[in-house]
Image (tube, helix red, strand yellow):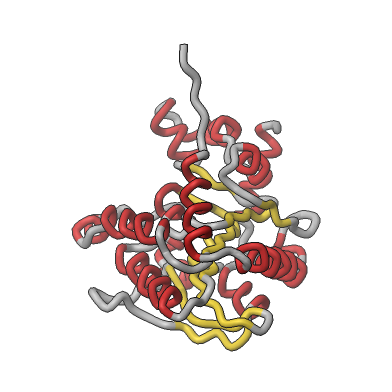
Length: 268
C-alpha cells in the first residue's frame, strides 16, 4: 500500500463528520443505560459504558468517546482516557462477567492520557490491570476499532476473543507523528511513518492481530453512518454467535492462544 493510500485513511478517520461512539450506540443498541464512575476516584468522560440490548440479548457496551467540536472534545479529554476511565471499564466488565453478559468494546483513541495527574493516580497500573483481567474474564469479549487504536490506551479495551477493525481504521503502538518525532526527530515525516508502521486493517489482519475487517461506505463511514452501523451490528451478531457455542474454559483457552501466536521473529 502506498504512503498516499495510508495517509488518505488517516484523513478519513479524522474527518469531523466521522461517526463516534455516541452515534453508533443508539444506531446499534436498544435501551442503553449509561453507568458512571470507577468507585475509587471519579468518572471519566473519555470512556462511556453501560448496559444495553443488542438484537434481543443483554450486553455490556464500553466505548471511547470522541467529540466533534472543541467543547465536546474538552469534555472527553480528546478521547484520551485517564485511570478512572479504565477502572470504570473494568468495573463494568466484572459486572458483565457476574451476570454472563457479553462485553462489546468500541475502541477509538489516540492513546491514554499521559498527564501528571493521570500518572500520579496510576495510569500504567490501571491499563495493566485491565489487560490482566480481560485475559481471564469469564464471558465473551468482542472489540471493534472504529477509528484510531493507539498503543496501550487502546489495548486496555482490546484484549478480546475477536477483534474487528473498520475498513479505514488504524491500530498501532504509536501515532505516525510520534513515530517520526522519535525516530527521525522530524514530525513532518509522519506520512512516511504511517507507511512504515503497517497499521491499516489489512495489515493487522495479515499479522493475525485483527480477525475481521468491517466494510465502510465508499469514502468513509461519515458518508452513511446508518450503513456503517448496520455493518458493525451484523459483524457483532456473527461474532457473538461464533463465541456463544463455546464453554467458558474453551473460550479462555482460545483467547490465551490467540495472543500467544501473535508476532513473528527470525533467528540468524
